[in-house]
Image (tube, rainbow, N blue to C red; front, side, top):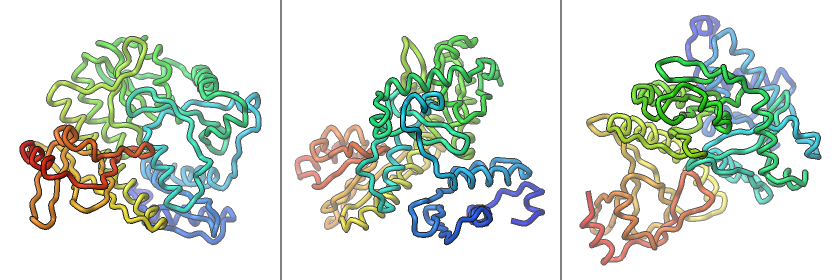
Length: 403
């Protein structure tokens, strides 16, 4: 990218960014660099040390032109620094911090490693569900990088996950100034901590209850670095969350969740807007997120199955737009094809020889063909193994429910 483009703030391409990262790695002593434009990664020689560029590129593109060299240097330094966690809990406890993620984050990471041929037999992530579609984990935070603490490390420390998470949450509280939640609109607050743990403050719900809100605290976590808060009765603020927050979710990197969560009676719950306009905005954002996650998952699974010489079809999550701009998803279940189906709004049943095909809403179809569907417990977003096709009796019932 030329100096004029940098000066004008032109958004770089992934290819241009990859070249700058490779040049910075080379200046720092890395050799035999291999850039894979398909999965947007850079591998050092024949080692398994691989830098995946998506989040780095998002941070780079969002930064001011003058700050971009610093973003590159931060990622390069973190990547080249071979970190390790302390051998005992007493040493590690002061550097533990909680992180909040979509479970797809960990599942996709595991898929990625398997697709690359890595041995994941001893890798077990330590997580705890906060609410549907939201989990907490523990990280060891150092000057150079943030490393997830897995179950093998917890066993080595001789401590439980709950104890580690509690310690990490205490550390987070010590670093939390409640005044860093700034009101940007009537009853709408956005976090300003800027320390990579803004979203983790959902684990400190008491600071949210102190805010002047219309209803119970309702949060949106578009990415790792933001937490939006309003009240459950503030429709105008919820709309701003879903419209403006959508940009943060898809364009600022480290995306977290498209969902809304409310805190009531001491626990976090998934919140689904009932107002038609808000529901449509929320569902469209969720479908867009599903489309991206399923596409990424499909790529990893296909690469892994090819490596394993396994003939298993990974069905596509197809997302379409209606005339009113709302989105819906569907997948295809074909006769005679051993498949992994994504969870979509509709299933298209395909009978090849007769060329018959018809679409059935997911919840209607599942009531009829659930015995044929086997949920894969390791995959998020969810996929279902279907080894056989519905019989004639089931097809007749499905046709009656067809859209």
